[in-house]
Image (cartoon, rainbow, N blue to C red; front, side, top):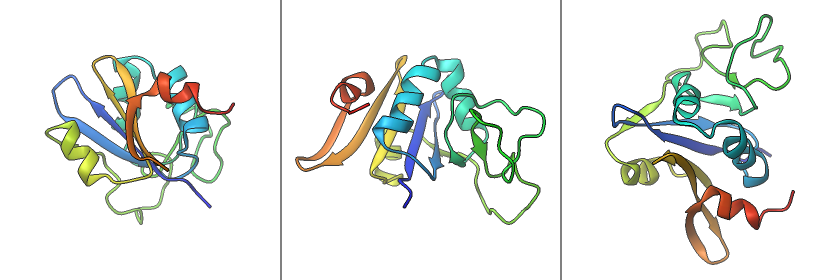
Length: 143
């Protein structure tokens, strides 16, 4: 079973762009990768440019031979960029005028947000909805 997450970035033009990641969206995977490998505005923005993804990995570059069917280890797999098929529908990043709008419209168990130079995460646990700085949420997350 997959854990889908949403990744939203407040881009330099002020628009919030959101994409879905369809596998391994939980804190110990997606949260750690975002916090470690996409910790700058430039890297976070690059991540949402290619739209929805099958899986988040350490790099969003596209090396030779990388595709949806034959992914290269360590590289994100994006539906539109990494596939020859046109059947994926609209997989482009959705745009919102505020983080609040993105959080309401893009409801997943985990929603990662890059704004003001850092990552935060909204998630649900036994206490209800939580919204924390990602490094703080990761402190309580098992390796």
